[in-house]
Amino acid sequence: MTVYVAPVKDLMFVLEEVAGLDEVAALPGCEEVGIELVSAVLEEASRLAEEVIAPLNKISDQQGATCANYEVKTSPGFKDAYKQFADGGWIGLTCDPEFGGQGLPHLLSIPVGEIWNSACTAFALCPMLTSGAIEALSHHASDDLKARYLPKMISGEWTGTMNLTEPNAGSDLAAVRTRAVPANDGSNAYLISGTKIFITYGEHDYTDNIIHLVLARLPDAPAGVKGISLFVVPKFLLNSDGSAGARNDAKCVSIEHKMGIHGSPTAVMAFGEETGAVGHLVGEANRGLEYMFTMMNNARLSVGLEGVGIAERAYQQTLSYAMERIQGRVAGREGTLPIAYHPDVRRMLMSMRSQTEAMRALVLVAAASLDKAARCADAGERKRHQARIDLLIPVAKGWCSEQANEIAYTAVQVHGGMGYIEETGVAQYQRDARITTIYEGTTGIQANDLMGRKVARDGGAAANALILEMVATAVQAQGVTELTSMGDGLAGGVADLKAATDWIVENYVSNTASTLLGSVHYLKLFGTVAGAWLLVRSSIAAQARLVAGNGDAAFCRQKIGTTRFYIDQVLPLTASLLLMLKRGTSSLDAADLALS
Picture (tube, rainbow, N blue to C red):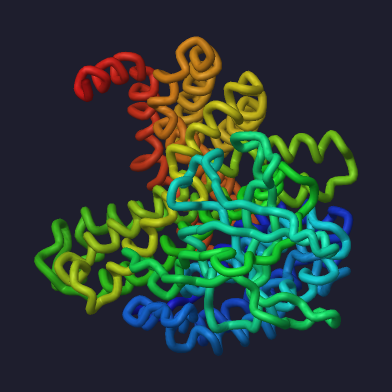
């Protein structure tokens, strides 16, 4: 099993040349975010990840979290690693300085998040959920609730969870049955009762309190999603001085036995089985789902980021193995060479590398828009970037998680029989990646959201605005002799994306079901073209560095070669995806016949 090395050089290159670090640094509140600060933060994150967290990855797979008597014991080493993580201030990276955060942009926290996920996704899930809970409380909670909970959550003294799913209510949150009734004790509190399942880090041994955000219904709530409210329900009630006091009526009755991420305890939470779990309403009644989506949207981007992290780790280990493993004669080469030189293995390795770099660029560009939507001084620019991030989140979540599964699959394939057994550890990446296409909304849910809410609803305006930028990049590449063929390839892929987008706008309302049958095809087409666009932008920058003699020439040539492979071997998939999308009506008819 190879040692993980954080890809700091590539992260810095993408931040500077593609994601627009200089533009984000010019935003209000980001004046200190220069190359030196970003480089120092990434180097420090790399040290913690490589030395402390990454060595726990395989251990956590073999010795996962355990539950007994409502208490959870986490994997060996996790508790100490979390203490170091919290002591380093990593949870508060982007949080409000008023409550102890550092107020840094998402464009810095996202590459750091990739490093945590490469090191150990099961470990990274706890701070990811805590960050989401902090986000929801920061935007929607009362000043009193913020003062009580945010400082200790931001410091890492307490962690947070998101409680949506119930045994009868998976993705359909309209079916939520958990109840909240007024405590009638003069405290403005509510008593929560119900069961929630699939709660990541719903119970653990890291901290002396866990702050649950719980969706529940008030007695007079309207039916459906319009009748859901959000409550903050701590594991331990707070004393008058803000410290953890008496145990609340909220407990973990079991944790799931899962396919992967064994180190992450996925809890079944029981609220109010005795006296009722005491909770406090966040914001206004019956707006809980709206508030939770503040948390969920960022969580979806974080899940895409998990895909990038797992893909990078799988690629590093697979490349190391392929460079050492000797097997068979290599066509067109003399002497004994490792399997990395076999043409088909080279194809697999480059497929892994090029897609991982495309995914990385996509989530970093999305992070830049997230910052601009929140911080731009101009209201029009904020609105434009909000539309951009709304468009990109389902793509980043859905496409990156799907590609992570493909890359993990390829990692096992390159290892051959050694990949199928647990000794090498590469099978862990395939098992860990599998959940990423499911939680925070399956790929189908992301694709429906992209097609219906983000493309059809605005007549393709946001998508077409992005497509125009892609066209401009293709034209720019066509004007550089060394990159002309890349520009031509990108232009063809963008034309397919434009045709698909126009087809959706034309057909969605009149034939919704048939159009939605191809929604995942459209999401994958979108992601594939977006990845090509950003890789071509990377190559334009790399070529400029080569011409200027500025930077690492070998790195720049590798970046250009990676893009060329992607344009030749990955991007052509868009033509078939477009064709399948347009055949939705006949395919739906065939499915109806087959299932009748």
